View (cartoon, rainbow, N blue to C red):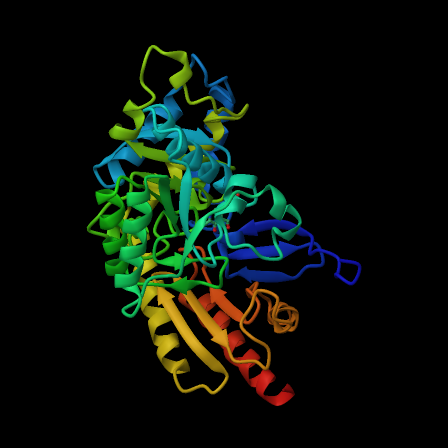
Length: 411
Ligand SMILES: Cc1ncc(COP(=O)(O)O)c(C=O)c1O
């Protein structure tokens, strides 16, 4: 925007800290758009990439494979619930979703159900910026210009105690009509929507109906994956399991772009044939880039350590305490928390929205406190690298409390 300030010029980063060219430093309290789980310039990941760069930087991933990709596939299958069997590589979160949607639609097409193409998605969903992922996302200002090109979706609200029976009935009805291919959801936390949260039990009930009615379930864990919600994956809170999971962001610890779409053997089998028309024709030049895979392997080795488990647990407990302290604050409309994600919805004269004008003043206020927080409208959230120290977290909490005081005085 013409009125936007010049971007901050970051010259280096270490752990939770970003250093800018004017000699300032900022605590990266949102893990650089939710990707950086083990801290900036983590030595283990950096060394793994450097070593890999000296061995094999890239090779076409059609007719060829390589050790980092094989190792990563095994690690992913090993850590995911045991219904998952096959890994498809791409480059980022949006493409991991795009791949999942194409996989689900072609799964039915390959089996003679070319009319099974409808997708069910949640209201307020965000799944990325490519055309398929925009289509299944909420229609809003982000994608208004492309509306004529986005495909229709059957949309349902997030489940709760009141609407769960109705939603189950609705999904069953769409299932019986026979044209629904898949149900896509961000499990437990809708990130870009403002960290909206819902309970696993309700999602279990929806997945159960979808399974019964032959609707493929796609969990978009691009944001929630790799420890964010307190378990390795948000689907670890579920009894039912989806057929496809989309992963990106934290997968490489924030070092390299990488997306993966992991599916069950059942999905894979619909493509495994000698008939070329059954082929899943989707590939990118940098598919399964060895440097990205090496980063992901190193990041996953860190993720499964006791140290990392402790770090996530400490953030979780610390967030819980801070959340409790906000309960009676008049400016706080709602506090939501799951694992290392803490969201504070601030009461303002305007409605809750990504475009709430309070966003800019809050963002700038936090920068003056040497904290990098990027509110989603009037929702301030913390999603730090797991290595953030208690002292740094306290500084972030203090800045948020100060911002509430500042608002109280200036509203
Ligand atoms: C749930 C979810 N899915 C998909 C995406 C898109 O990922 P990317 O920005 O890597 O394309 C995002 C990004 O924020 C996301 O939160």
